[in-house]
Amino acid sequence: MAKKVIVVRVGAKTTHIVHMDNVKVNPTIYGCIRVPTPEGVVEDGTIRDVVELGRRIKSACRDKSIHTTDVIFSVVSSKIASRETTIPAVAHNKMEQLVMAKVPDLFPVDPSNYIFSYVIQGKEYVVENTSQEKEGEEQPEEEKDDKDKKKKKAKDKKKKKASGKNVSKMQDVYVFAAPEELIQSYYALANAAGFTIVSVESDGNGLFQMIRRQVTDDSVCMSVQINQSGTQINVIDSQKLYLQRVVPYGVNVFTEAMIQDEAFKVSDYEQAFEVLSTQRVLLPSLNAPNPSDDESLEKRIQVTNNGDFLINNISRVVDYYNSHYRDKPIQKIICTGQGCSVAGLNALIASELGIPVETPQDLVGIHFNRKVTVDAALLQYVNCFGGVFEPVNFVPKEIAQKEASRGGMAIATMIFTGAVAISAILIAVSVIRLLVSTSANSTANTRYSALAPIQGQYDNLKQIQMNYTVAESMDLLLTTNNNLFPSLIKEMSEIVPTKFRILSIQSDETQVSVNVTTADKLSSLSALLIQLKSISGIKDARVSGISEGVDTVTGKKQYQYSLTFVYDNEEFDKALQNILNSSLMDTADVEEEIGSEGEVE
Image (cartoon, rainbow, N blue to C red):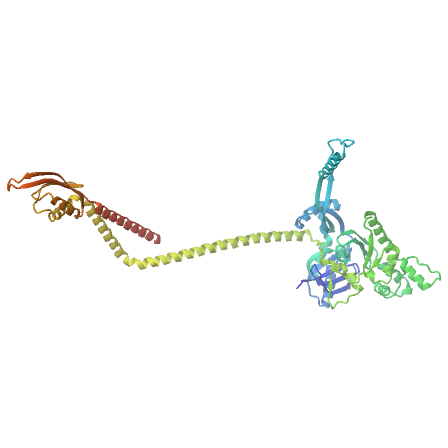
């Protein structure tokens, strides 16, 4: 739901109050109030008695059950100056610096006593500055043939394109200057009435923002807001304000003439305005003829002619505009304010200026609540209606500095809060990691405590295993081929012939040589060699040096020869390698267990 606001316009004679939504698109109007401005409380827009005026505004809102405390003030004052200027098109947050740089050239005043603000005019546009290059060569007076002419034309076209161009985007802005004292008086009024200021608007800008929404095409219109004692004139189109003037004449030029003439029987402005609104007092033109000397018509002519002050001032504004914007003539006049309720005033202005005059029937850009009566009287509030769209927003320097400091503190607070949040996240991550590590350490310690009672038995078992491996290794390493010699002789005795006698034996770590004598036939040697191959631990058995002789004791024939064979170490080498591999694996297992125990600790 849109936030509501009251828009207050303090005039010299009347204060207008509008209760509406504070939105920029189709705000809803909930109520309009008009109360007399107390005598002497306002002087050319500056509030002199904030207490009395604040009480009057608060009471009027209370009577209409309006409890909104947010307020926008629309300031009516001749002290507010405005100028149009052009700046490079930049981002909105960078425009203020460019505008303030132009202020000394726009307003010949002491900047310390004034508040400056601006509104954007229309859309950004492109400005193109073209500087032609100087020709470096003279062109021939005559071309030889058509081909040369085509070449020349293409060359000239290329040179034209090569001309230097400086293209830049520009933006029109309308700059406002208001005395600091004037704006401060409205902040004091808000404080006295218990309101919170949303913005302080220039009355002319509020009118422009509202009326430009009534221009639906590209034509230029003059907005004439005729109030009680002044008239505000804006020359506009749907996007831009071309000219703004304030004329010190309003409906009072007619009412004062009526009050001074007893024939109209009115004693004050309200009575005279009632007659002007309900009866056709004004004539269609100034200096109307009265051929029959009708007294009643003569009274009407006098009242109508008194409007010459107002119409001549409007005419001078039209002439001034036409002298500066000849290519954009004024197509029509839109009449608003209290003057649009005066019967015959539109026709009088149209007749004297020669420009069609119309009064808006439906206001584009706003929506009225069903409780609001829609009639011509609402046109006196158009300045207030436009206060929510794009207000000038005058802010006193002291308040602007406080808001800037508050903004700086807000940024610092955000940075500090962000740093604290990041620190909290890092601390949380560290705490989580610590908890995970603590949990893992606790689990490992529990497991270690559970295994501690059998650690001694495990250590003894490993020690026995290592001792056995060492003993087995030592036994194998100390074993030599000669150690196996007695068992070898025993096995040989079981397979040699019965008359086999060993004369001598020579043995080393590689082979055995045996000198043998036997009375058996030589054919038994083949069987002996075959039997020797079945004995494990030897290989390559052979017989050499066979000699024949006679036994000195028996006198029988006998043979003498040498039997040699080589030790077979293949089985020994395999056994030794197995033992070494087993020892290395046991050592690695022990080192791994020692390392894991160190990690647990």
